[in-house]
Length: 280
Image 1 (tube, one colour):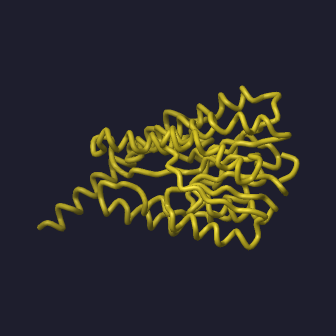
Image 2 (cartoon, one colour; image 1 turned 45 degrees about the vertical axis):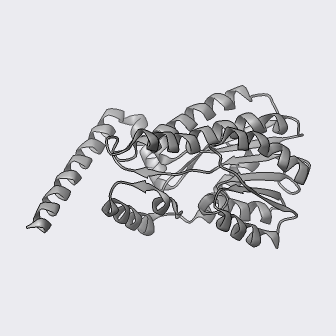
Image 3 (cartoon, one colour; image 1 turned 120 degrees about the vertical axis):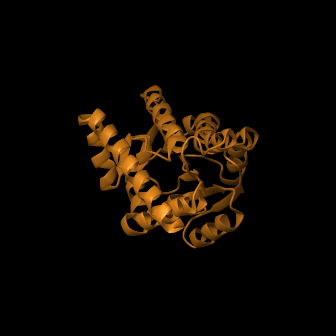
């Protein structure tokens, strides 16, 4: 995309984390903003922050897992802003639990938001993007769209699907005025751990400590995504851990998977021994 100033950017999951940071970055570049989230309080907080900078800001309380709400959204934004140039499918949720610990309803919930939200966004917004001089889609996958890890089966399911869908759509858009960037964030300082459905409080605590220690700021992640839009970059890996895992999976796929399984097995054994000791 040659320029961002004066463009209308739609950001789902705008209330927190990467979505909030992206909204701030778009505003700083002179974009109008249509902010989308189910978190009313967080959405209004982001809107207050960017209104001092952005040319125009609208807020839309929408569940991205709802076909009806997403189908109606583009027309509402067009009425507010007149155009849609950029769509960021960022809204996402997590579940931290083994496959057997999760219910079918858990799988349906996460697939609805993380996968159907992206599909609905692309399907319902793409006709409007194609009508503009230039347009761009950003679909947010994950490090776990590169590698599947224990207790993240449903999350990886959705993020691998977003990856495959985005790669196919990118090829279909070749030669059009619409670009597409597929983003694989690594460990980013967001509220996804606290907002995740989780089988064990201990798992949440351990994972949050890792995020607090190693996570990149959402502002740095947003800057990389903005740059990808400006340069029409197809694949965006964010964080050194994402590059390391990507290359490990490419060069040593079986060894990487065995190491992951063995490491998880050892952690389970340590946790079981610790739990038994605490009960004595």
